[in-house]
Image 1 (cartoon, rainbow over the protein chains, first blue to last red):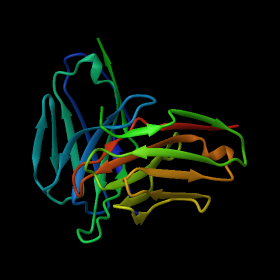
Image 2 (tube, helix red, strand yellow; image 1 turned 90 degrees about the vertical axis):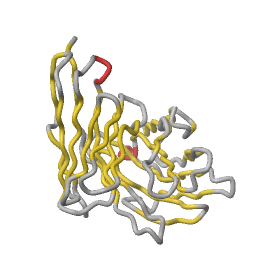
Image 3 (cartoon, each protein chain N blue to C red; image 1 turned 180 degrees about the vertical axis):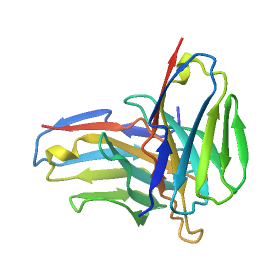
Length: 115
Length: 111
């Protein structure tokens, strides 16, 4: 089955630093999504990418859909303490006729921001 | 608030029992997805429904089943529960290819 490799597994940074994390896959995806999850809560959608090469920003977050459609990265600029949590990448490969759009998730990157 | 609601928030039950988890998708979303999250397996796709019909199955056990009703809410039924079924169960909804929005989850503890 499809596998997503997400790295790094964890990061400990100082407030104000920039952060970069990435996801690679052995398979092609049509859509890449990035989520953040606080403990005991549901994943919150941060950014959705729909085209190869697409670069999208959401405030201090920027994500890119790799040209090969097998990878994506997420950057967080000027981190703040509330950025803490687990960041998940997710790939989606759906057949447009069948409405089948399940997500395959990476294992997550645990981000800790020291004030 | 994602607009997806799930009940109950917490569920504690015993092995061998059966439980039902409920999900209401965002207004207008026809697709509902169920995911299981455990410490060792991460977020795993279980099953998808689209406008009342099953569309995709993932790693869902035969002891588990789901359905989506005409009002688009969905229920996930877990039976003959085992200790290893303890996990967070999330429902997500979407409109077609758009990003999926997750509910707050149900934490199931099987004792």
